[in-house]
Image 1: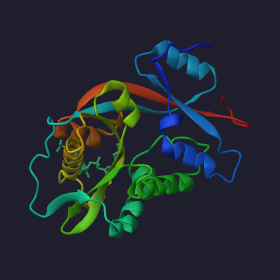
Image 2 (image 1 turned 120 degrees about the vertical axis):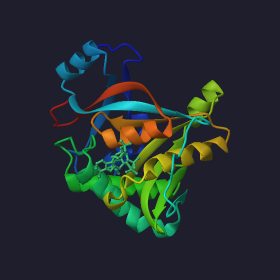
Image 3 (image 1 turned 120 degrees about the horizontal axis):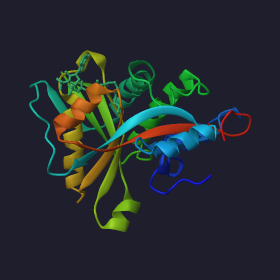
Length: 243
Ligand SMILES: CC(C)(COP(=O)(O)OP(=O)(O)OC[C@H]1O[C@@H](n2cnc3c(N)ncnc32)[C@H](O)[C@@H]1OP(=O)(O)O)[C@@H](O)C(=O)NCCC(=O)NCCS
């Protein structure tokens, strides 16, 4: 089976949580890989399904250009800043519930992955982001002096080197349900663009579930544009029902 390059993209080399999920696994059942096919490439989509890959999500890719983002209007009791150690506990708890109870991530959608492990994955993703391995910066939104939201971001040195243009990618983000609707997410997305500007960066990419309208609206309000869409697949090795 062959896929034309550009229609299919492997997640594994660039997705730190995926390798963490595999390396931290106590069970040989958790051994899988993932791939993404462009929404519009029907033959690739069919070929992946025929080969046993399981569709786990559909996402839109959003792009932010430095100098073309805005935080919009913010309430007086809101501010965005870089993460500090005191944030770790409340924000890892938020990460754990955001991707298991508030939205359905590709890990939650995979019936082979226990939901507790998925929650642990996102808590770990946030903590390792704070430690500088899964992210280069973590933006934190405060409401009334409390940390209630975060967004992680990683520079992409390989693409930056290859193109001479500064690129970065967003990781995970969430706002506590009690503080949603206050434009905290657009404020964090803009803060990250300014952080990137200070380092000579130009573009940043993110992925948003196709039915996550709140996040899409937050991105568009910040000035993002939609670049393309992907279906994501998981395949299981060794006793799984995938390739
Ligand atoms: C998506 C999310 C980060 C948005 O954060 P936010 O700070 O509330 O963003 P905004 O205040 O800009 O709100 C975004 C849109 O959602 C709407 N919204 C926010 N909270 C809402 C709620 N509880 N019910 C209905 N609509 C809501 C807002 O009105 C806004 O739409 P509008 O621009 O038409 O007014 C937040 O809803 C969240 O954490 N969701 C769960 C986790 C998640 O989706 N993370 C992103 C993964 S890519």
